Length: 318
Image (tube, rainbow, N blue to C red; front, side, top):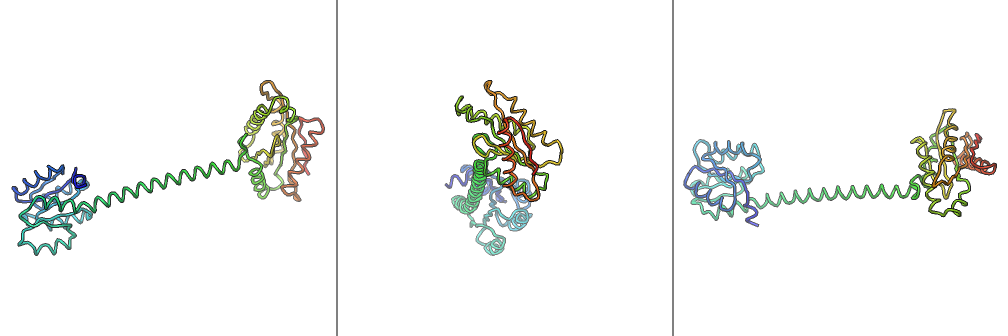
């Protein structure tokens, strides 16, 4: 752990005694520390400004020419007050320690310097910094993990909402969601609202003759054909089996032609050379309608279309 703390640690070392400085630098480099050295407080302050974001800890003598260690520390803390600082001091300089404590100096070493004291002080001073960095890193990892979980939950929620609202075979609105959308449209619409009921003609015969797998493929082809021709605001849903419904708004007098085009498009479809058709019933909302009565009138129009020959559209305004 100690080797880990010292490895690649960048130390600003300020000492005016060249012999002490040289010996200390050699030892610090032996433990893989990076040393930026200066011979007085003024030079140390300049070196700090040049490397402000790279320096991990400061080791400085107290008594030096031009600018002493405490003056340098005071200026450094105006720039960056989170950096650990260790001072070296002689016995006769004990009076300076009170000022050093006020400045928040992390530790001090009495001269003559024993190199193991420097190593021990650096390790003790850097330990809280290391723990703080680890906590910040862990916190960032937890935030990232939490964001990932939230994204997954959000994605899963959307998937579940989609499963709960769509028909699994065709991908359009299921019965439950269609009626939800139909009720919403009914409440916000006037007499420009129309309901369409749709049924595939002789679908049971298709299933009996060709099998349910082919019947499913016809349902998928039918819904895609109709969906491609509807407006994005139109509500289209599968009510069950081969029965479908549309709710749409229109003030265009040709809007029934749009529904007739659906019938004609399906009439021209082929699936493995198999033809099929649909019958449709349309009803327009009136002042006395509820969503149920509106859909019921469209359903009655549908059964009239089927009973009168199929493959046709019947409109009942009221």
